[in-house]
Length: 82
Length: 426
Image (cartoon, rainbow over all chains, first blue to last red):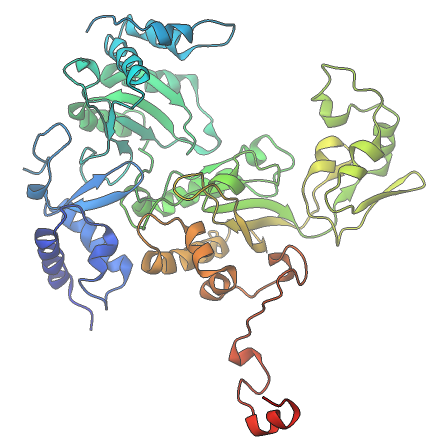
């Protein structure tokens, strides 16, 4: 059975905290709950960005997600949510 | 910021053609950071390596696209380009602007950025080149509130949809490209602004096979206008062309004397399927062989017109060279009606059937076209629920290896091996 939205948020945050690399593809979050549809996970991940729990990291061609406290901006400043 | 010695770049100002170096020097008179663009580029020429770093967390809050981070890796030498982010602005359908709007965009970019623009980028967006991180939010506020314009797509988002001029100016357009482009841009706002996919995804809408937005080469989903019934021929106009009374190609090649118009050489012999012929003084088209390429219509636009039963062909999987080489789109749906009345339901169903599969099974940084190649066309068609059609193959029986599924074979794969061995000894 798929996790509830709050449960899904918690496991995604945990994944973002514990993953070896700070930047994660959206697809990396699919493994947090194999029973949830990709669109559901996408919506939850984007909601976590709005809540400040995650932030986007973009190369320009690909967008990834990261915890604000695990990533620094290119010029060395902390993320905008810090 | 001061001027830098740029002997190699200065070479690019020589000759009769326009020079971006000259443009940058002119812009530097009011935007001194442009001197640092030239300085850093000269250094890149010397070092034979780029000095731009790209990407990062820079962006507009809550938006996963529209801003591409750019930083100098030598900011101490070129402080004017320490930050030099690119902003993509969603262009209106077919890129129609008022001069008031264009002045507004230019004023906005003079206020918050370098003043340099790229009208337009290959995605179709207005591209505003060069600003600092702290300018992004105020720029976005003014762009959306004063100019009523949105940012475009980048990253793993739906990219800004684009379309040809369509029926606004072109009599060949087989559907209203502007309307569907605008409607789907609004329909997919979430996908446009927030990353949803393994990699980039683009729509492009062309009204006919002339494909003025290069949909077949540059979009994951190309909707290209076509028709289902017979091409329309005005035999009287054909005769006028043959008599030299109407200029071929609507006069497009009139700058040089190409000799008298020769319908055999310029039209019939160039038909890719050889479906045209003359019977007496009448032009005949075998419509069952016509591939709707538009060549004869382009040469004789007053004599030939698309048929009346119009719609579009949907092709999928084109991409530019990154990462595994360029590829053209593959024809998937030969004909679909493009109907505003049902909110383009047929096209939306096709789009979302692909997305649902690709979101789940596409690899990171794998375009739809690459995923299609990985699994094969037959499997891809099966996944999105499209029956294989003759139009899906280039020619009959060019592939000796046909793999049947058990349900496609009468009686399945079960057989009596003892009975078989009576006739075929091991």
